Length: 331
View 1 (tube, rainbow, N blue to C red):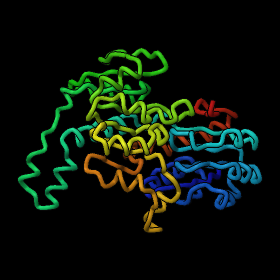
View 2 (cartoon, helix red, strand yellow; view 1 turned 90 degrees about the vertical axis):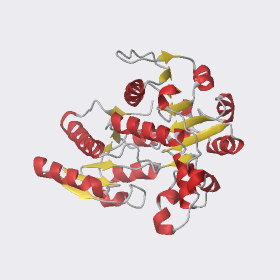
View 3 (tube, rainbow, N blue to C red; view 1 turned 180 degrees about the horizontal axis):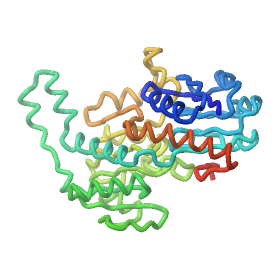
View 4 (cartoon, helix red, strand yellow; view 1 turned 90 degrees about the horizontal axis):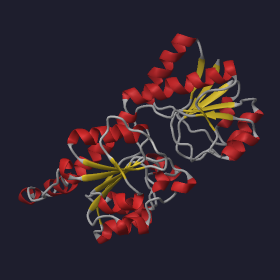
């Protein structure tokens, strides 16, 4: 099978090479994203796989159809950037990778929590300014003494609850689906109660329309003064303008943001263009009680291999059987 891969990062190349050696597939690897400008590069391929967080616009699916390509395998979980109506109109079936490594993201959320609880940003700021004595004065909190609210109890949420149990933290959970969580210690509560009673709130729900700005100004106002917000979920879960305001007022004590709301092409091209005109990004980046990261919570060796292998296996399933258990439709 000839497959065109877009958004290919250097870390993925060894796994693509291993797949090609094992299967005989011909792989055309492109570091560029799949856009209306690059979709023509898939000419001659039978299927396409992609990794990107910017939109898959209607023109992309029209371009795939024009080349007779009917399958697109996402190498990531999130699908809120996919125009499913356009995909259906042009007959393009889409799969994703629902769980490449829940542990990677759960562990990253824990790392953010510990960093913020111990005021590590303030400590580093003081040391870099040669304020050694001042750096010793930032009184931290222990995770084992905190109440942590986990919003979303899917694969990642469940892994996080297990880690929090290990630390000895009290765990509150909220999910719209009633899920049995054997072996985990937690208390299911309404979202309003979780926000009001948690020292830390960690988001692990999909970026659906229903969850857009799940954490807005009203939600932030109900949180405990000085609470910490962690978002390793999806970019649209948090109203960034409201987040900046809550941090400025002191209502929120800190934030760990791995999935930034305005994750646009301009931000992704920052290293090439040398600028990114977004005052909210700059406001967050300047604060020592905010830990920004570039959508890398998932990024481990285990996860990257799983993303590549699962996506390519889905394309073979679609070619051989006309279906896959990992088909997604946006419903």
